[in-house]
Image 1 (cartoon, rainbow, N blue to C red):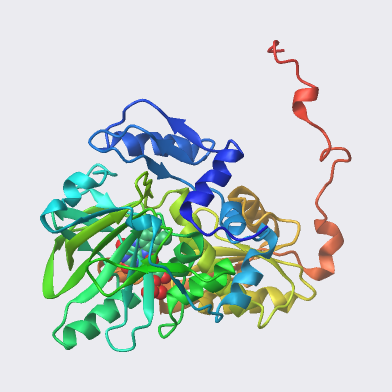
Image 2 (cartoon, rainbow, N blue to C red; image 1 turned 120 degrees about the horizontal axis):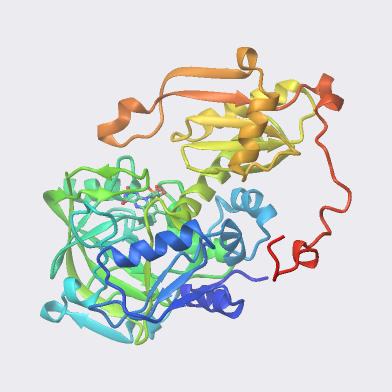
Length: 452
Ligand SMILES: Cc1cc2nc3c(=O)[nH]c(=O)nc-3n(C[C@H](O)[C@H](O)[C@H](O)COP(=O)(O)O)c2cc1C
């Protein structure tokens, strides 16, 4: 299967497989949309399209990456090959293809015609959020000196008709780009892409080296040059096949109160001084779809988690070759490494490599190949039945992990848990198997009309 080249292709693929759930009735973008999405994510976790969101003509599409396998598919990969392939592609680039006519510029609004508080869905997610937010925007900016493009996801508060407030958490590259422009006394031209091609969504979520051009990295990930078009009002190239682009610049020397915002840790980031984006234009497809992501929901945690898993995979395989997979079940400040252990030291080496492998990672559990690393209950089972706390739990004091300024001190110290069975006792820890279990379909045995 080839990688997908646009957000639209992704939605079409999911719709063809009847995975997309469609909401016809009108929903309020203030809280109601999120409440419905929460039910979906806690239940069947399917992609959702809201066709009638009060105050906008744009359909709102969300939860396209509720499953990790969809990330793999959109990159043209089997899920089992995802991490290995992402690591092998890490330093690859493919030059962009420039076009003049772009679907994303079918509708162009500039200057006084633009009002982001009217022209975009005004989605308010959590109870105490300080207003409506764009949560699925990929911010693209060329470096003020080298011109290399950075791409990253940043939440944007819809503050006024031509103003957004943007969160750039240190040490994010976009903040460094802006600091370098600011030092030169300049604003940073920047575009916000909504409904971006999958390859770009992943390069934006990944820690691509600072010097790399992320439009070219996105091309390598989709195995085909990214089609780009020049913005109408700023010297920035954007994906021609995106759904919506907001053109503008991040202002030098200005910070404003942004927040509070219910973010991916499931708590609120308090009001903080953050960057200000002046809007110059909105361009879009005539029938544009608006992508929205619930911070900390399944889609967000997959987008954040897979690049972390790949980064850890890269580090761990330097020491331990037989890694089956790496998962981030439950949350992304920890990971579970599934290994085909050949000797007991491999579990400890894997643990240590992972703890140092990604700055945010503060809890690492290593499990045997017969434990499902994606199933938090199975991982807890392994800890309870196979870990020897006295010798199998390693605490590394002092090391910081999550770097959000105000909670930094809580995230200090790291812990590794060896939940693998000792090789010498392998036979004692063999898991039971039940012949025939894999082939049985419960509905062939249970009469749907009876309760007994
Ligand atoms: C949906 C989504 C929203 C995100 N929002 C933010 C944000 O508001 N601020 C931020 O600093 N990072 C945010 N991130 C994380 C960054 O995009 C991510 O760390 C990225 O690797 C940073 O890019 P960089 O390597 O160019 O610094 C978000 C990630 C996702 C997937």
